[in-house]
Length: 201
Image (cartoon, rainbow, N blue to C red; front, side, top):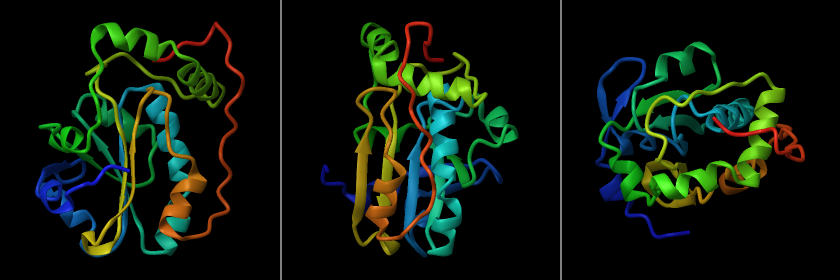
């Protein structure tokens, strides 16, 4: 886990998807611990499935005073994402992609994106998303990767810092609960064996 300067990163501004107002990232952990899920895109099929997975933890997080927050790198696809109800937490947009940069979430190149998007991990998650009826699209910035940051109350320390390597990478629900020292009965969706007919969106 890389060393994160929470004071510096905490000053970055995010735009609330509900009110449109700008808030500092650090305001999200001021009153309690927070799980910050950074999506690649709001239209990303794998991100949508992962958002739905993480949302299974929301009752347990809420019961333990932990906030659940989703952050996207652009507004494109936001309204559809909200309307379809993939995510149970509050949603923000990092319009300057400053948090993404400061937290080390890499950008693919056009050349590196194709093998990454066609990789086994992505195909496995995409086939699960298809089975769950979750679709995606190709709108927006296809080259941005995402990850997760879990911060203790008041920004006291980083509890988990996860950077996607493949677009299909995500943090298991058990690891999120462990990082927060809480218990959860949420059942993780099974990732099926992929086949060559499945590709990501």
